[in-house]
Amino acid sequence: MKARLLVFVAIVLGFSGCSSVYYGTMEKLGVHKREIMMDRVQAARDTQRDAKEQFVAAMEQFRSVVNFKGGDLEKAYDELSSTLKKSESEAAAVHDRISAVEDVSEALFDEWRQEIKQYSSNTLRQASQRKFDITKAKYQELIASMKRAEAKLEPVLVPLRDQVLFMKHNLNAKAIAGLSDELVSVQASVDKLVRDMDAAIAKADLFIATLKTE
Image (tube, rainbow, N blue to C red):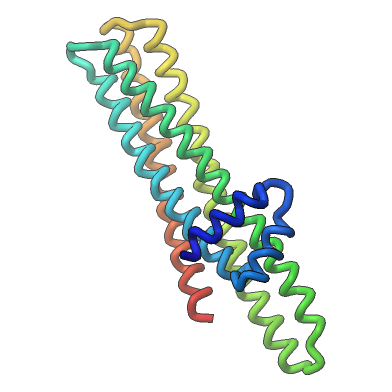
């Protein structure tokens, strides 16, 4: 129910260039920035997991083309080209999800920082400040981990784009055999990507757990 409400309000407000209006409207509907932040961190985590799986699939597709032993070469090209497009789409989704997390997190921490000043009790103000500092530090670790993983996406896409273009211009078995030299470097890039994605996903799980317990 809440998910449908979020989608509805996002559509009504256009969700572009009106973040403050969106958050204000959601607040009036009983959905606070903290909840939106948690939803977006979860969505970013899930998107990174999807991207990881897609890039692993792309690597397997690339490997099958490099080891092509005969058959419909045009079909092999079409499949790798389709896989590349899906990978590019997943990479774009990861970027968008991370940006959404940053947007709501900035609004949440700005609001929290201003509200700390409203305490008349020094004890409560200091306690809230400590919780703010801890949460902000964990968030910064999370977003840094997500961005490290995101930064690995494009370096993997570059050689894949090259190979798809090379196949398009050289649709013959001899030319495809020449791609084998790239296999090791592409595999190494994908391996690094998977490690960073796993680390970012783990950070997201930890951050979500922290928000739920506070």
